[in-house]
Image 1 (spheres, rainbow, N blue to C red):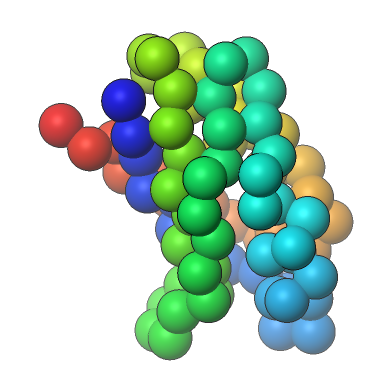
Image 2: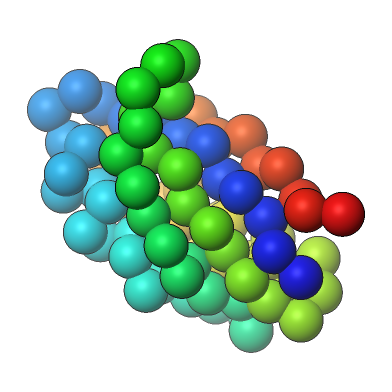
Length: 77
């Protein structure tokens, strides 16, 4: 299973947050890709895991990085 995680980040910490999140994982889920984007969000992350619970654990781990202000998770169906 995969999910896109859209992130709003403090403007001065976008690159730092991207590096910290890349490859991070928890509960069987892992952030496999992080890209800087333009628009209302600053980063988009692709999380992969065997189920929604694993994706949720991965997202929670990524949200705890200093500088992340808000996230929106979009599971791929």
